[in-house]
Length: 140
Image 1: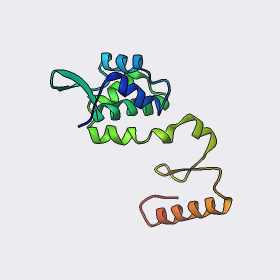
Image 2: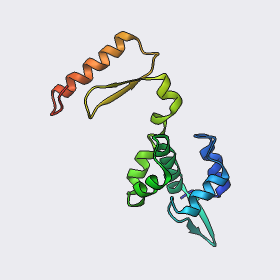
Image 3: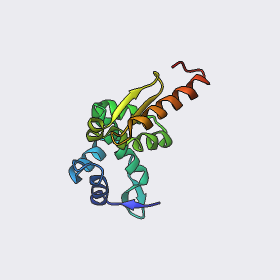
């Protein structure tokens, strides 16, 4: 288990979002939006679990959720689900949203593609996904 100080956590998170400073890390800890710190020896420390929570918070806040709704969402969630949310952070990067093209194939399938993909490749991807969906219960 990796253990971190609040300062180390803020430095790690600033690579993902420069707004995640030491003050924000301490505030989120204080309001209980992340789980209680782990006791290692006689010190309370952050662990990789806490990093997943912080990244999940950052991801959900990028979707427009308030801290109160994020706290409610994460409160009873299993760590594996928090981790899934934290891994989605790059997908809700505001700069990428403006840059990339997002296509809704069905209510359950949404594809985001870089503008660097050729029109021909983009159409092949859409056709392939549509073909796969026709073979399942989804309608295209």
